[in-house]
Each structure stands twice: as C-alpha cells, then as structure tokens.
Length: 160
Image (cartoon, rainbow, N blue to C red; front, side, top):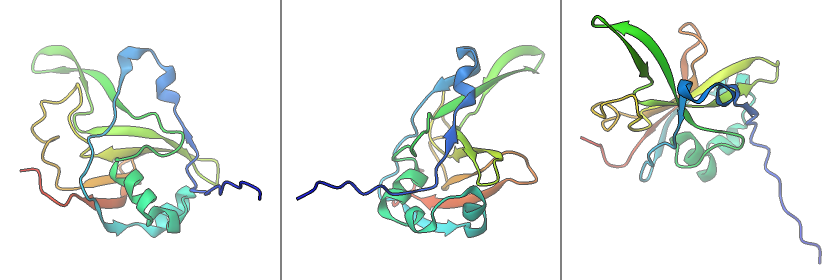
C-alpha cells in the first residue's frame, strides 16, 4: 500500500515584502482567536480575482484561515507601523486593530495586500476597539477604491 498525501490547492500565493524592511516598521503578531466563527458573507468576485479556491474558503479549514484562527500558507502576520505628526508631536503610530497577512499574488501577477480587520490588540492600539470587533473582515486593502471585504466572520459570542 502506498502512503499518499493529498495536496489541497487553496490559491494562497503570499509574499511578505514588509518583513524584509527594518524591524521598526512592523511588529510580528498573530491574530487573537475567534471562538466558533461563522461565515456570514463571502465576496465570490474578489475571491476569484485573487485566485482563491471558493470550495476551500467555505470549508472548515478555509473558515479557520479567514477568521484568523490559522495563518494561510505563506503568511507572516504583522501590524504595520508608521510615523506622523499628531497633536503637536511627532510620534510612532501604527495599525491599531488590523494585521497584514501578506501580499497575495493574483493570477494576473498583481500584488494585493490582504489584511485581517478586528484581529485583536496590537502594539499600536489602546485595545478599546480591538477588543470589540463587530466582525472580522479579511480583504483587499491595496487602495480605498478597491477595498472590499472578501469575507465577514462573526464570533459566536460578541466581545462587549
């Protein structure tokens, strides 16, 4: 009898160019888990554009990835830092409740940032909104024009 391992083609083809920047620009961080996530909305058009397998995304394993309970293959989750002038001071700021999962390389060869919104507290947040997400949104964040959720995940118990 031959031992065969099934290879599931999920469509994730992530690059992580931000981790090649100096460490001051980001913090490596895993999302806080969501107990019993439920798929509420899936953007089929965007999933196809990104080259992701729709059947996989709707499976138990795909849902765990979209909820942030498991990292997609090739992902190196991080919170991005940035600096700015705020309230009369120059300060280091950053993503308060979103993690960059990586940059998806689409079938057309385009690079698209994939972020997990409502993913928990980061070093750049006070934790207020990070601990009270209405839902998780994993989507295309490359520009405001193209920002549309791939999926909306709701936890079984609201974090109020």
